[in-house]
Amino acid sequence: MNDLSFPGTSSSPAITCSAADGIVTMRGDSYPENSFEMFNPVMTWIAQFLGSETRPLRLELHLLYLNTSSVKAMMDIFDELESAHARGRAVQVTWYYDRRNERVAELADEFREDCTFPFDIRIEGAQAS
Image 1 (tube, one colour):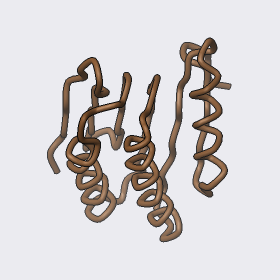
Image 2: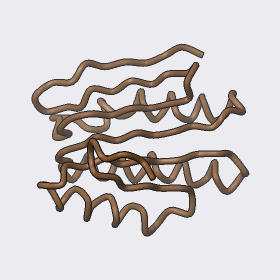
Image 3: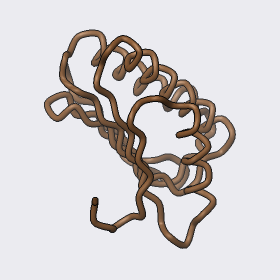
Image 4: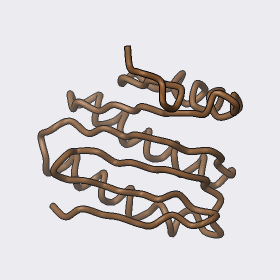
């Protein structure tokens, strides 16, 4: 399985999908002109990883802002993780946020309410407990 990587722009997050580590990382703002086009390769990569690998998959989010279509794409990703978790796959999300941006923490908490898999929300730079 190949890795996947996209550099960030002023309106889209930097995204790295590491098959060796089983980690998908997203960092930055997400308000691209076409969220489906941007997130579709990531969703395909996640589905392929969950279908071909047995190792856990971690999603590490350092997202500062998401527009409505990016929120929808994240919902689709979380639905994929939820389905995998229901089949016994180890999946996990850790969403990091800046303590000065409580709106992102509130958004992450709204997502977490609908998930049964491990979903942590942490202040960026804080030590894990």
